[in-house]
Picture 1 (cartoon, one colour):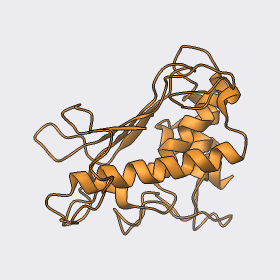
Picture 2 (tube, rainbow, N blue to C red):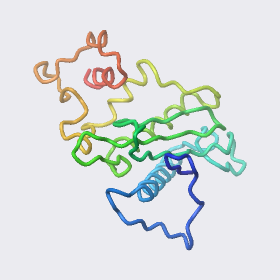
Picture 3 (cartoon, one colour):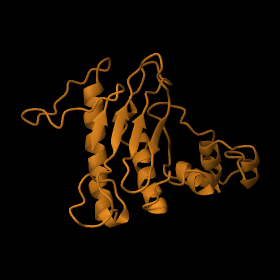
Picture 4 (cartoon, rainbow, N blue to C red):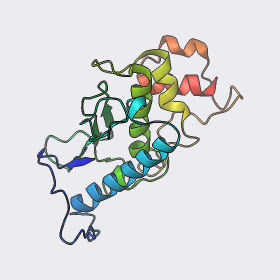
Length: 210
């Protein structure tokens, strides 16, 4: 697992003597943010491995120790700081085939008075959500060197059905348009709504509700 700043410069392998204690400062917390990203992502790596996302299953790993699959494809993480060119309210995971580095990008959120760094949002939201896209993409595409499937019905359903509530940390109103409900007055979305709701997450709300 390698973490990058928005300048795309890799961090040192470790600090001496392996001390990763960062002061939490909302105005200057990039090192703390990267440390959080690495910790959570490595924890998920271990969890996924226990459930079968191993070397032969095309996982993201620097050295496969002779256990199959292509190696040297660890995940690069990019935790973006606020700047004039910053993308807001988004995250992404580039999912190439086995043997090519995945890339996880986390952007700041400006839906609240103080901008939120979603690296610190530990419920099933962006960091975990995006990393799980990496898992699903590798399981679908395997060792194909092209970008894994992230379009169509499979992706829209996956993008919205994972969480019961979504994004209340960065937007108290939640990021969904309606509460999930079988009652048409609470959630009026039906299969027919897919004709106009073509954006990936908007379509995902439909799939998750039906």
